[in-house]
Image (cartoon, rainbow, N blue to C red; front, side, top):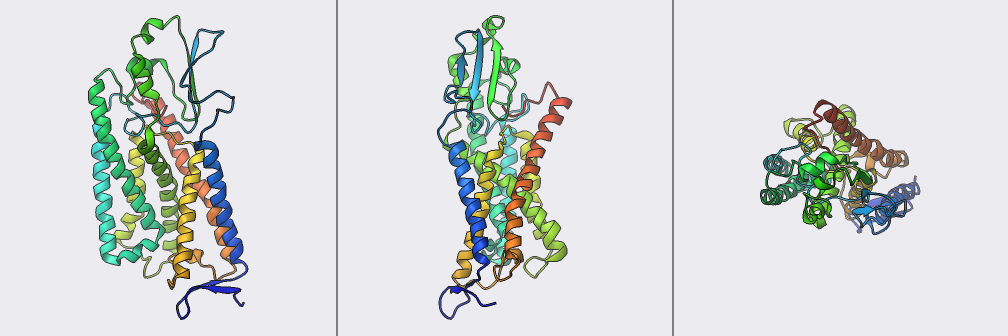
Length: 354
């Protein structure tokens, strides 16, 4: 089949474009724009579905003595990036673990670069592995800040950085939180907490906190996709000289998931579904990167299912677009299982995201 045109410089290997490749371009384009649209609606300024302004974290119904705390689904509190989901666990535990994970992953990434050179970054695995390393590096800094905040607050705060008296009165929800409690019976208890403490517990995490949350949820989907594709598709059916199984590649396709899972067991970060969009954007950027380097003369495809010169490309790209949902959904199920199992086995110790 004759190509429609060739992208690239004369005399160099270039990106050969066939008619069916435009369908592949459309699949990636629609996925990118759809994800971006979801983020504009969910992450941008707006109102809650019921019309309640989400900026008001503590609201009071005028016809009732019930106080209601309302937060938007995208809300990340200032304590969630560094706090543990276990009552009484000092943030230093997360600090140490994240530092160890960051160092170990950085060492394996360095060994990978030494063995294969900088061209190893044509692989999605190295992109994801680097992102997970950045997650733990940024998490180390945020946890260090959390230790400083925790030391100022003292023992009256539980592991999640929320006053113990308040935590005993409230139950969290990882989506839109609306916790109500009667004011008359516990008025004296609530007054023990200052207005500063109340606002500090539920104020926004800020730029670095939200960036940390976004990287976390992007990594969650990406490590599932990376490891499943490697162990279930590439190793059994598509092994090459660049994708052969050895000790280093086995660690590169397992430690990222293991370390992220261990961090998940301790952290109190929420996991809303709409941030699947960041995972999709991450993969779309990688695919566009592959198109660009091939148009500039790169001669081989790191993953055979990304190659555009076969009529099967449409099916491959469609499957890759769809598989993002179950990959992200699998990690979401892990989060739900964590909350359900730990809250039943350790009701007095486990707090969970709020």
